[in-house]
Amino acid sequence: MSILQKALELIRNETTSVIYISLLVGFIVLVFRSIIQNRGNPLSRQVSSRIEAILDERGASEKGREYLESIYHKILEKTDDRIKRSNLNFTPQEFLMFNLIGIGVGAVIGLGLFPFKSFTIPMMFFISEPGMKIIVARLFTALALSVAGYFLPIMIAYYRERKRVKDLEEQLVPFILSMADALSTAKTPRESIEMIADEITDPLGSDLKRARDEINAEIPYGDVLENLSRRIDLEEYKIILTSMIIQSRTGSNLEPMLRNSARIAEDRKKTKDEVMQVVNGTSYIAYIILASPIAAIIGMTFILGDEFIDNFFTLMGAIYFGGLSVFYVIGAIGVLMIRNSIIKLL
Image 1 (cartoon, rainbow, N blue to C red):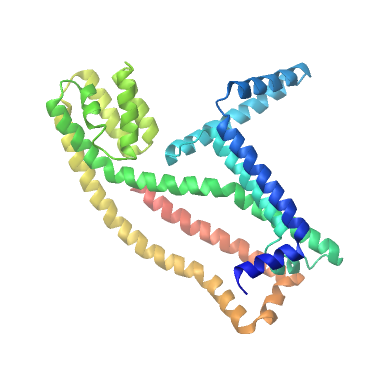
Image 2: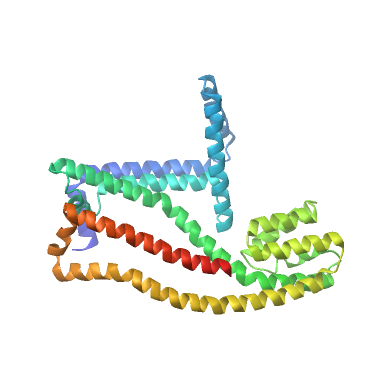
C-alpha cells in the first residue's frame, strides 16, 4: 500500500482526529510564528508588563514570586549557556519555546494519531476493560512522545556543542600560531586580536570577532580575554588566554610563550589522538556487548514471532523484562561513564 493510500485510509477512519490535529498544529505554528515576529515589538513588551502588573495587583506572594523568579532565571542562565556552547542563534526564551512546542506536538501526535498502538495496547495487560486499556495506552504514548519532543531540541544542541568542541580543539594550534605571527607585526596585543579575527573560521572566528568588537568598544584587554575564555569554555583555551592576560599585564614578550605553547599543544594533541584510538578500539567491543541482548531479542522475535512477544505482556514477563532493562541501563551508563572519565583525563 502506498503512502498516499495509507494517508487516505487514515483520513477516512479518523476524520475527526485528523481535523483536530490539523487545527491544533496550525494554531501552534501561528502562535510560534507570532512570537518570533513580535519578540521585539514594543506593544508585546507592554502587554507582558501589564500582565505582570495584574499579577501584582492580585496580591501574589512576594516570597513565592521571588522563588519562582529565581528558578526561572536559573533555567534561563542554563539555557543561555547551552545556546552559546552550541552556536545557536536563539534567545533562551525562544529555545524554551522549542521545548514547549516539542511537548505539544508529541502530545498531539500521541493522543490524535496514536502511533505504535499495536505495541502499547498489549503493554496494558493489567487493565481488563478494553476501553480503559486503549485510553491508558493513548495517554502513555502521548506522555512518551511529549518527553521525546521536549528533549529533541536539547539533543540537537548537544550534538552541535560536541561538534563545536571538536572544531575548537582542531583550531587551538592554528589560533596560537596566528596570534604569535600577529604579535610579531602588531604594535600591541590588542591589535593582534583585530588582525586574526577575520582569518580564522568559525566557530572560533565568531568568538574572535566578538572580542574585536569589545576591543573597539574600549573594553579593557584583560576583560576581553576573560570574556573570550568564558565563551569558548575549554580548558586548553583558558590556560592560553590566562597566560596571555598575565603576560600582557607584566609587559613581557608574548610571542615566544605562544610558540612554545603551540608546540606543547601539538604534542598533547598527538598523544590524545593515540590514546583515543585505543579507547575507541575498546569502546567498539563494549558497544558490541551492549548491542548483543537487543540483537538476541530481535532475532528471537523474527524466529518465534508472537509466541515470543506475548511472553513480555504477562505479569511475570513484564517484571522480568523490566528488571533486565534496569540492569541493562545501569550497565550501559557504567560503560559510558568509564569511557568519558578516560576522555576527561586527556
